Image 1 (spheres, rainbow, N blue to C red):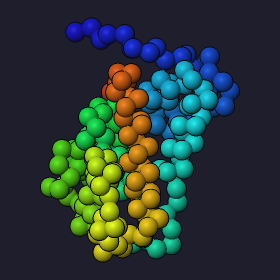
Image 2: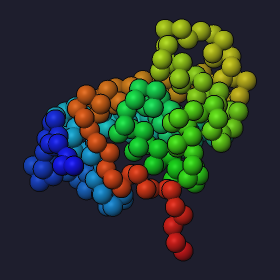
Image 3: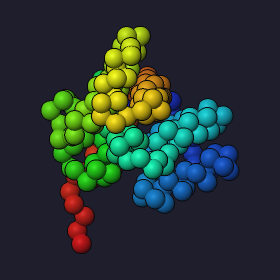
Length: 199
């Protein structure tokens, strides 16, 4: 079956502003390919810069000195994968599921988290984190003090709750942009982290 043309054609790499092109090439060097989101959103450079600045602030943040009170990079990807599945975003589930598998070194985890995180191979702490994230995703207007208390029982503080909510909300935006524009995951994402690398 022939694939249909993209709803919003991505600009060519050579046509991008210098700063954006440099960042895209950096990602390509690291990943071995250019994730489609980097080119798809580059059609509007000012929005691209704002989007990736907030993405990096949320997802590349260094964890604090208290390991029980801060989110690992893998846990941040769990939030993205679970809430993107709830939002039915193919691009984000596939792409961030791949990153989750790599960070956690668990080839089955992303599928478990996307389909039903309550049955996934995660800790009680991570389940509490995803319970909070899913409530923010689906019923943010119903968040109450008891939800914060449930997080505190697992060592999360109010700043962690902010991080969980901010990641969920930011990717709510990302999910909707990817879905309405019919952004497709790169084929490379489907296999990443599923089979251990040969030594």
